Length: 271
Image 1: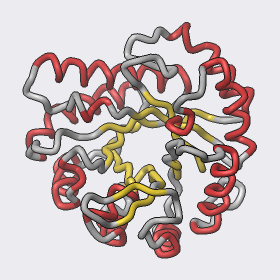
Image 2: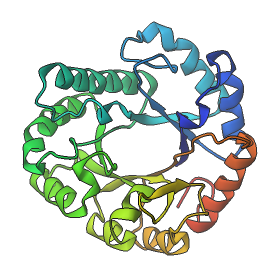
Image 3: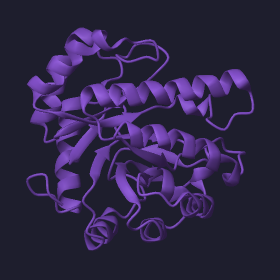
Image 4: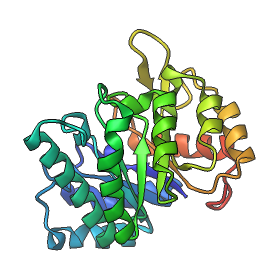
């Protein structure tokens, strides 16, 4: 399924979400990945289920599906934190994502598997505990390679996945995050069969690496698409899009939708 993260709606008032969700669907996307934040946008860790009935209706009316939940809160509150308050917050965020995923029909929840200074071995116990809840809730747990986690290191993430060895735990591979820290082909092939979601983002090599519009970075998308097709990948492909000054959201969504479908040979929702 081709979907987009709700980051593209940063700055959009809640009252206008219904209209923008329809625009997302009309731009060629089937799903949306929602996020949990500290402040309602529209979901925070304090949001109650009955406060999201309007969003469920808006998503359905727009013809979209909620693919799953993710968050950037684990950048400040790692699940492996040794600070009790920070770790409690991290786990509350995970619980909220599970609750919302169940409520809205999301298939998966994506998390950073620990802080950047964390030894991958120290993440095993807490991830297993989180996965027990995920499995009981019928949700896939995704570990994402993000720049603020040890998971940006391909070897450490591989060791962690091998140690966990659980079919309910998959990799959410963020292409733009992987590219500055290793060969994309190696990332794809090392985690073949374990990648359950692909985040589409682009970057330019530099010091530091720079996130940039899709197709305008150094990622060889033609090669990425070829490898993914040869892997017979059938999971979600999700665009990460953040608003930029002067950007027309509708035009950019349509441009990238066409770009992704061409590179990944997507026809009628099938890769």
